[in-house]
Length: 222
Image (cartoon, rainbow, N blue to C red; front, side, top):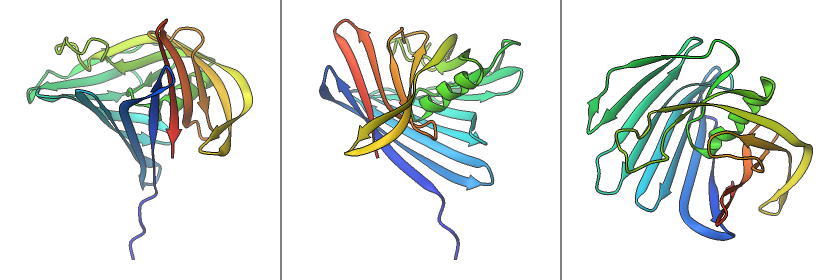
């Protein structure tokens, strides 16, 4: 009999100013062979669906493909692959591929892919912490969804992470989970964001003051 794949799954609940939202984000992590895994995640929000499928080897993200699908519009896709020297990137809009771009990376410090979804956030923060608390993070751009020509193009910036509390407990679904509380800064994340990571660097919760009128609290629901 063939062994079943090693599969884990869950979802994230998004609350805005204490109230549940219509955002639904699910994820799965599947062991394929040896040290290779496939991580998939989909976020449903009013008017748009965002999905990511990534290859992870030895805990590090190798490549991923991201797809943006707005209601009544054609899908936009992008493929990212990271080498030691450059980011290899290609984008499809209305089914038409762009030329493949090879974007040089900084020679100093760590470079990390961050494919938008919450299941990838914990490993990104952990990698920055391992590198001394700072590094280059590459994220597909979704900040201006009305600008379809810029959607999913690489957004490259310096980000910082630090541990606020090395040993903490977080109650999820009446179960207390051991974790560490971290701060993660850069781009939209200002000082004061808090991220709870479990012993496997999985994101359990994060809080973010997006604006004076918008406070997000996102929690893992196994």
